[in-house]
Image (cartoon, rainbow, N blue to C red; front, side, top):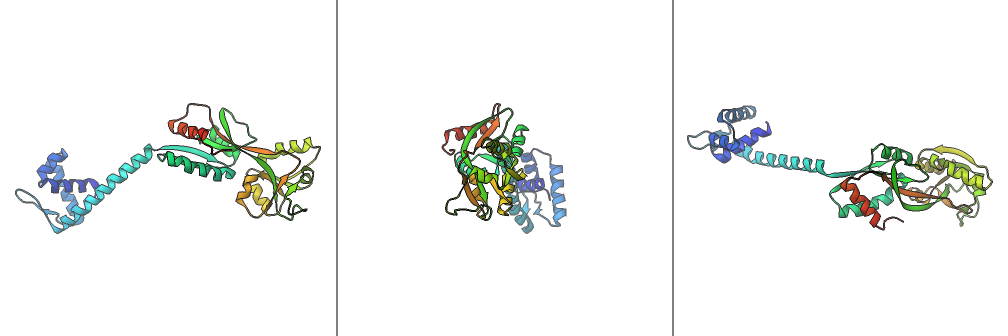
Length: 288
């Protein structure tokens, strides 16, 4: 049973005759009669009595007429929804793990103003998202410094401290004062994501210290997991504490170690939907 057969059937009923339906459908009568014959053979019922002036529906025909109307209406709705979805503006946006919470709040605000703009969210590390941005796999993304970008523009959304995160067994001392010096930190087994390696080595070197970077990993979430397992002290952005309750956070007292959250996009003419997104970002107070 095909949709066009249901359409033909309803057209005949509405017109009252096969010839009238053929005229309304801009087709000849023989192929129309053939389609109805095939429909009746498939259903193994007679759908209407063919009178000299007007057709009369059988009981089976009455049921099919009502059902066919619903099916055709649903088919039309589905077609319109598919077309609308294909025409909807979609922004491919990247988010690092530590920025998902912040960006989710912003997207909620933006979507209230622009409900017609959709988002395809890509999650990954700063280096993964940097690569996707440069390869045009995402339109805009959050990134963490330090990072080197090619052919991109950036805006600083937030600046935050790098802190030490570790289980209580890893750092002894006054439990009420969650602090650690750079010198004390240098004596610990450190856990770093690759992004912070050179930054931290430079900080230790500047202070005349040698450090023991025991574990290195690609993603900050991995560094946090290792710290949760008591394998060392992770150096991470303070906002990563939102993701765990299994470690303590210690401020680093004698070094100003910071990281910035950047919003990055390519230096080129932006699509209309991305222009709206960037304009809203620049005018909003959602960043710090």
